[in-house]
Length: 446
Image (cartoon, rainbow, N blue to C red; front, side, top):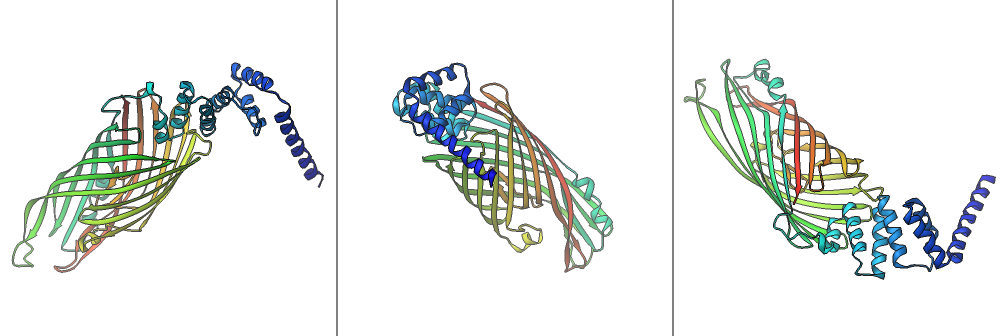
């Protein structure tokens, strides 16, 4: 009881002192104190003074600028944004206030708002605004883990397994700022995958090593509508080409004699979709939907993601997402295991290590088969299924124009192979393996 009474008394004293500060401090006193704090770069005291003066009738341009700069220096960009907006109400032409407001938006991951208030001297009149390059290898233990699967577990007259092995990846992208509200990102990707097909026929193993080539074109257009709203239509085209050995039983059926021919497969797949974002204070809400045609399978995705910046800056942030996927597959695709549980959960966390450098990690749980993420920038179109994945990345600025990124990813895969028990029946047997990727990238702002 006494503790509660004491707490109430302290609260009332603070309230009275705040009220007295508002009513007794003159314009001259406030100006003198705030200027002194500003000159000494005593940002915490300036912020304390701002809180004491809430509701005060003393309000003018330089006071708002001092408070705004104090919040800015403490990386409280939501607060600094409000102060600089108030300052511009007193002097709409002040270039310093405009520049501080621009960077407050920019450092608070509000690029759409930032572009609308970008000072003239910072605007770049050029065709290309940024160049992005990323590349790296993927290492797989699939061959080591499953290369003897059809021999060790042979029970039928014919066994077949297709092993995906190491990969290479390259992406080159360009960003264009067409207007204050509209930007375009597009790029080309090249992926190469070493694969091995094994066939066990009449006790003999036939092996075919082949190479899968994939070339992609990706584009998205971001349109900032204002008041925190933006829409982003996107399109990803995938051209896949490979040639591998196939076995054909010779007539009459049951002769157990086979001929072998190389056949070429070409896939022209795509993903198209729309993403809608709404920024609300420290939160960003994203709704996205897409339609795909991948590996002879059509599918839809509907996703919801919430990104949050608890401290009003990028010192720490997180993102939580859930995606519902649905597929319409031919019977043979279902037998190969395409599809799976319709819900995919994702969680990301990021933290600044030091000024403008940060580390980010994320984990995804759910079946990723013919699945797309990051506005379809990434498409998982392997016939093998990812059941979970995690990755960690480090981003470091080299200078004002160049930013380097290094990432590591780990994937748990499920696959399968075919075993023919008789001439007319076959079974699908499961396998597992792991992939590890190391991707490095450079972003160059022109």
